[in-house]
Length: 251
Image 1 (tube, rainbow, N blue to C red):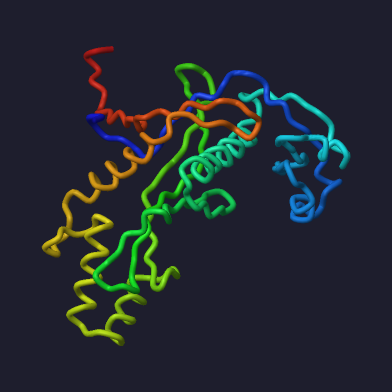
Image 2 (cartoon, rainbow, N blue to C red):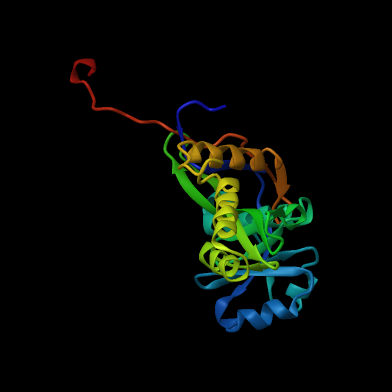
């Protein structure tokens, strides 16, 4: 266990070699959605005035007017962050069988293979995690470092459809009774770590979330970027050094 103050940021080590990609001017592809739909084995990412392409077989990109290029990891951190974002999601989806819901800058991965049941047959809970990428400048090494911000997320379900706690309470009240509604809500909030089994506020809620995130990260030691670069995921979160006021007698 890491002692001290930590964030939910986990640094990564990316294989140190140039990124072999394809590139095209952004003005040649005004409709990225149409471009993505036309690709079978490749993906694209647009940044400023360029569209970068990568995948199993870049022939389909070359046929559309892309050209090959090599990019330095340190010189194009936005592109690397995107590749890291996709590579991590692919790992969860392909190897751990999570269902990944992609957003623009963040994604959520849910474990539908291990749905958590409640005493009400219609109500269930799915454990999940939200992740996004970040890059920072490390003044000590004078290098850009990359990482993943990972948070615990849960999905409440009613008959396998997403719903809020309020919606669940209303449904149970209408179809059962108030006692059952209180019981089901308590079950859900206990399983998410918000309250204790007795119904009191969980003073260890932060520890609960920390342990859940660490357990999740421990399942993923390595993965690959879409370019094939290997990535090692730190098993420990970034430690926060809390500094006090300086004492001039030491200077």
